[in-house]
Amino acid sequence: MRIARLVAAGVLFLLLSGRIGAVGATPPDDRSTPSAAERTKTHFGISAEKYTVDKARVSQHQTFWDLLEPYGVSQKRAVRLARAARPEFNVRSIEAGQSYRVYVNPWLQQPQYLVYRIDPVRYAVFNIQRPSRSHLDRRTVEREWTVVRGTIQSSLYETLIANEAHPKLALRLSEVFAWQIDFFRIREGDAFRVLYEKRVVDGTQVAPGKILAAYFSHQNEPYYGFRFANGKGPKYFDRQGQSLQRKLLKAPLRYTRISSGYSQSRYHPVLKRRRPHLGTDYAAPTGTPVHAVGSGNVVKAGHYGNNGNYVKIRHNGTYTSGYLHLSEIAVEVGTEVQQGETIGYVGSTGLSTGPHLDYRLWKRGKAVDPYELELPPSRPIRPQRRDAFDRLVQDRLERLFPLRAFGPAAIRS
Image (cartoon, rainbow, N blue to C red):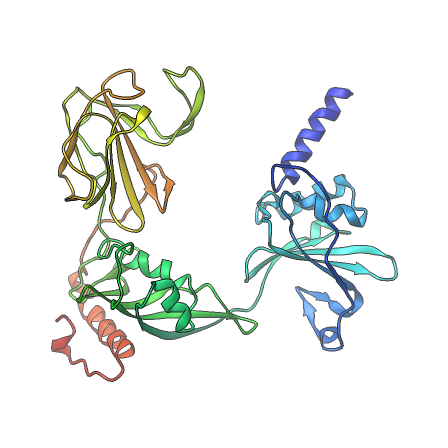
């Protein structure tokens, strides 16, 4: 019986844990009776006039059950609610600071619903008395195409806010021009115009939708990006119809074999214990040339403890690559390298059992498996789609620059 109780407790913890830490229920910070205006509303299919509403935010280290416990909800029912929400929503993903509401029946003094805000659009609606009726709901999103333009004074982020655009548009824009512009180096005087899908929920601007077209003047060099379906889904192209996407080399060297792949739990041959290995090990003879998988700027080149002789290259605002255990380094910090250029040679420096290259790749600072990363080929506009692309470019240019005239001859210039 004791073992059974321990197992049950473990299952309960896995189902309900939103955070690892001390568990302590925090009572809601605002209990209110709906106003006259609110009584006419239906929130997520809930008739608001029937309930008093407790409004609160998730505190640090709170779990899903912590939100329910003050209302007398049992652990067993909390588990049923958690299971009912899957796979659309996992209660372990609740985040500190997010808002939620509990709808309480004032006559029975029992909770009927818990509504958790996943993001400005999506909400998880838990039917406490009838868990099987729990579901995800979405607010109505109003969409419109709009143009924002500006000149950088301090940062792209601040310039967008000053022009009443959502700050997340900066990330969207950096992804469009990821291979053309190093957004760490944009400077005062750079300018932009962006045609994008503005999204509004209940009068509040939320994260933007897709960018349809963009212009960016960086160090007096103009860059254009147009979203167009050239085959397998929309991609971004310049005015000449060349893809803005650039490929990374799949492997940075000619290798004998992959001796160890990307893993969250690999047995380390030196440390004799399991630990994450967020890279790919290529077995190769000492002195084998190692090539940069993409063009970029060398941000590290030297000996770094267990990494041995180590080179790190920032390709753009999205991708960075690393090369560990080199016998020799062929580049210096601050230099620009081209895709395929030799940046060092295979070795066994640092914490290593034999000659190999440990290759790492990061996407926006997070380690990723290069073999799981799908980068589409850099193909230009297909001839049979050229006329449609030219028409789209003319339309987008006229939207970005409404006071200019763009004839057919000027589209690709």
